[in-house]
Image 1 (tube, rainbow, N blue to C red):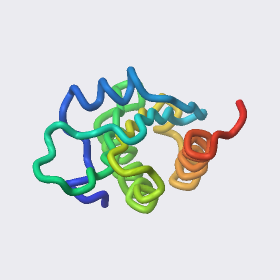
Image 2: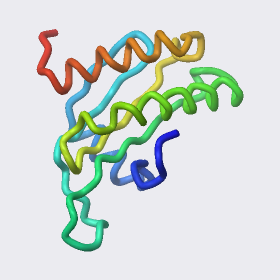
Image 3: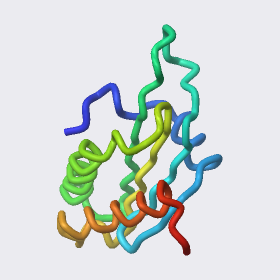
Image 4: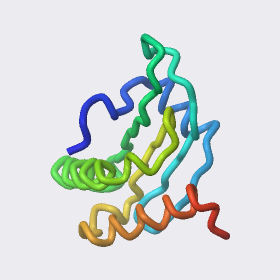
Length: 123
């Protein structure tokens, strides 16, 4: 599970990542990345943490399916959170196909999107 301090919670942070960040889409999800954004809410002078948030709408499925998708995405991001520059804001938006995708398919789509965003892959 993704630790609490690495999660996005404020609406403004979600909006910043989605509106001002870059994005990469795959069949089951879209990843929005705002690299190295400074966190105005963080106290002290320590390096800001990379934070991730998840958007899973009713188009994905019922409550049980949505929660399953969110748990899977949080689990997948836990291992990948260190790939991002410090202070990055990441929003993973599940598309309707995510409800039918298994864990391996979500992992492949997430890895492909992150490779495109972080590695500068071609379209």
